[in-house]
Length: 399
Image (cartoon, rainbow, N blue to C red; front, side, top):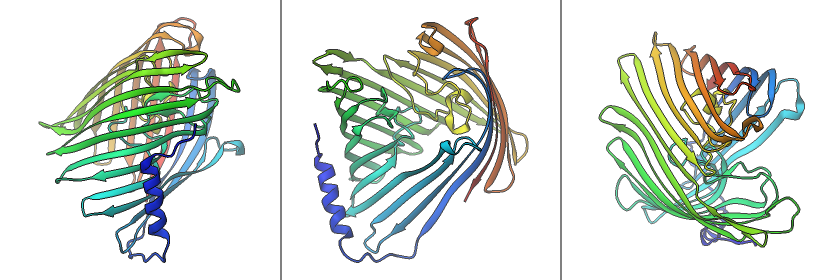
């Protein structure tokens, strides 16, 4: 069932009008981005199969921003990526972001297009995923934002979708999945606090080529806070969903998804000490770049466990340490325990405990270039699994 939300319709009308005539640009064109090259070595049981591999990958992201004389802001970002040097099948060109922001009535704006979802903390299930949306924002007073949005999670096929608003996708089948939400956020001194309600309509195919489609509705309630309080850096987020997980002629199942996350850190002279804890239940899957440990953070190239929650209800507690040995050299270390209930990891289908030990260093060559070396060891309490070891050497340049 295809639908066009009111915000999407309003966005299309507004943007068509905005772009109909000759667009006069102000001279504030901005080009910026980043590039990295990484050497990755993985050994042992990982998120896919037991493997012993060494690869080199590279990525370049380029952003282009400009503004019209009417203060309409146009933003686009492309990504060029090679997941394995020497294998042309892994080359990828992605149009990551393409948005237009139209301000009106002094304190309102309309944003429409494709963005990388950055709502709340990195724990949020779609954080870092590409989403297509129309977003109406309103700032009634300073440091306060109220908004409504129409978010298209799946249109036609969901083969390329990893998550939608925290829900793990099967990655197969056809159909539509839509979300409509209301939310707001406020900045209190150095702390950003926000929340949203989202109505989700799932009309995707139950299984590949089944010809049976869901007519399932669910409701998501989410709140987050991030920033500084009393000298502590804080990230926290909680989400609960109720309603239908699936609903079709093939049957109905309830949605019970829940996720909660807390990370607190304190800077003491050259030492940063942090503590993190999280839990996922009933299908909640976190964002892919979660800064809890090396094994949870794909942005570092070390996430050999994939996203937290993928293999079952998961609890993680972690200690994070970072020490600035000099103004250019930082030493890192993490100690963590992962507990996964009835883990589907490597098809063991029983409770699994993983103890993680991380060590790394990062050296700033100059203001724009950093080299790093990181090592992650994950030991299993299951004798049939081989401990995973991941080493990543990287060079990152920002421009």
